[in-house]
Every structure is written in C-alpha cells, then in structure tokens.
Length: 513
Image (cartoon, rainbow, N blue to C red; front, side, top):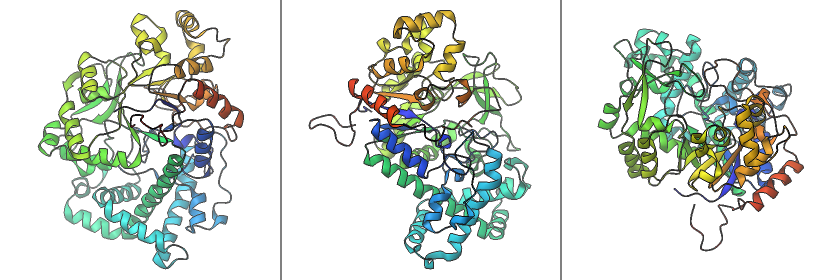
C-alpha cells in the first residue's frame, strides 16, 4: 500500500506525562496530539496496547485483542461520572518513570471502583444512559473475544498468578462445567472487566478521532507471536505447539545477531500453521480485523517470521540451537486480503532478512523499515542509509529496541562516528538532530523519530534493551517538554522536506493514501 509522504513520532502511551503513575489516554495524550498538529506531523506511532503481564512488555500481553486497563484515564472517568473527583485527587503526577508495581497497587483498584460505580448506576445514572447503550453494544459486538478474556482476567486475579498453566486442571483444560461455575462465581467481577474494556475502547476512539481531525494517523503494532500466559493460548490451545500437558513443545526467538551472541529466546509458543490453514486462518483474520479497528496503519513486528521462523526446543535455555521452519506467509496474507480487503500494513523487516523475505514483502506491496543508526557500519549496512532507500519505506533514526541516538553516539565505534559525520556533517557531540534532518530528507514515504531523539535524551531514556529482562518500558516524557519552540523546529523541517501533506486534505488529483 502506498502512503503519503509524511513524518511522525514514536511515543508509547505509557510514556506520556499523565496522572496515575503511567501515561494514559487522557489530557496528556490529547495535548500530545495538539503538539503533533502544531509540528505538522501526520503519524503517531505507538507500541502494542494490550494488557501487559510479567515483565511489563507490551510485546508479551495477556491478550492480543484486549486493551490495557492501566491506560484508561481516571480523569476522564471522573468527567464521565464514573468516579468522584476527590477519589483521584492524590494520584501521582507525571514525573519520573513508570512504577508498574505502584500502578497495580494504586491505580487499578480505582479503575475497578469506577467500573463498579458505572455498573451499579446502570442506564439510570445521571448522564450515563447513552454510555450504557454504547456499553451494551460494545459487549455484543466484541463478545467473540470479550467474554473469554473477562473470565481469563478474573481467574488470573483469583489465583494471583499470570500462569494459567498453574490453575486447577478443570480450568486449565476449559471443561465446560468448570467454566460455567467460575463465570457464575465471578459474575459481578466479569462485568467490571468488560466495563473497563469498554472504557478503554471509548477513550481510545475519542483520542483517535481527535488525531484524525488534524490529519494524524495512528501507526500501531502487532506482535507476530502471543504470550504463553495469555487468554489467546488458554482459549485456543489447539492452534499452538503444545504437548499433552499443555506445555510448549517449541518456542519462538531469533538466532544470534547484533543484539545478542546467544540469540533471543522469547519463549512464545509457536503456531500450528496446519490447523490454522484448515480453519481458513480465521484466528488471524479476527486478530487483524481487531488491529484495523484500533489503528490506521499496522506495523507487523518480526515480519520475517511469516516467511520462516526460528523454532527453539522448549528445553533449551538459549536461542542458539534452533532451526528455521517455513511459514505460509503469502497464503495467509492473501486470505487476510480476501476477508478484509486492502490492508494498511508495514513490515518490520529488520534482522536476518533473506531474499525470500524480501520477495514476500514485495509480493504483498508492503513498505519495509530502515534504521539510520544501523547504516554506519560496513558497506553491507549502507542499505539503511537514505541513498539506498526506496520510497516504499518507513524510516527511523532508531526504534524502541535501539538506544537513543545520543546514547548510540556515546558507544559507537570510531569507524561508525567517522562514517556518520561524513554523511550528515559534524555533529559536535549532539547527533540526534543531524540524523533527524537526514531522515526527513530521505526518499522514505514515512519518517518516524522516537520522542527521545526529538528531546536529545541519552541512554537513561532508552525504552527497551533486547535480551535484558529488567529496567525496560518505564521511560516517561517530562511534563512540559512538548514546547512551542520544539513544534516550530519540527514544522520548519517538515515543510522544507515536503512531509507536511495532510492525508485528509490532499491536493486535487493526488493519489489516495
């Protein structure tokens, strides 16, 4: 799919300076949309929005379809009448990093309190009749995943563990009598989970509508694999490589690479593509349908896994002793197109990319990705530099898995520094904006800059370090950082590099996005 020449910012919702100890969908998110509009940006890229589990990684969600309740704005719930303003008056402000433990201890109980209030008042609550009708419609339309997810979420709370594999055997194996008994026992709590999913959906819809008014499209992220400890695997164990005890036979990862000499053992269960094919890939159709309900453009994480994936025996402690297994990529995407029509997909094609992966992406007419930080090594790395980029590209200074550009510069080799300055000019120990300007001038249809690079922050602001278990995903932008001066600086660069095309107000005769 062809996209308009434009630019944007990568900033996950959790990184906003919201109240409640974590970025959310409330006032800070709407202020950021206003900043993007002033800066003439037309893309806001976020990471997966699902409910996070152990490790807090958005790429290891407990559901591929649900929203993360921690992202719900209590301030907006107070405006709706779900909770009294004085109940949230002492919430932590937007300073510092995300303390996920405190969010779970302090914010989540208030969210459930708000949901209980909404359910208690029902359609007769002051000003809530319209919302109640929307809630009932939401539950009806999303019932295919919502009912199972609500039960899964409540059972996790009951058994105080994210591992459904440790639940009582009848629930592990989803015996109908056990499920019915659990649903009856937790009837009120299940309604609260559904109410919070509705609140997430409503607040996200409102934020996305506000972005659309400024011609800003949301670029979202779909992880190729799902977590073992997820509602997806619990509900559909037959779709995954599990043994008789419902434990993984082989797990996902990548072989040794730039990030790790032992590779990355992610631990996600692998798909049984034979079963998925027999069912017309319906599970994937439902998943992508949900993604395009949430996002304007969808980035497919680890796209190369749709051509072939690295399968690691579950008993292995590292990713070294895996093997490549072919996947039915083209067949899958043709079925998705048949069921859903043309799809606004972007392939994350980083890492070990073979001619077969390139061919699959090109057959599907998907833009790929390039990362400037990768481009200053040997000649083979030059494919990440603008003079080698094709227009069908989404280009970055760095991604959420990279160090910030300032941090990268401090650890770059002498050869990399010399090559970078030969390409972008002297950086005088401040490399972020020289790379941003180079990126903006590239032929890539979409240029995306991590928020940390716009702010010229160092390694302390890094979002994620692959293969490192602790200290990730917690960075937050400082309150007041989205200044008029920064917006003007971005807008000027956007205009001179012809990236200020508003996708909602294209000149007459221009091609559709």
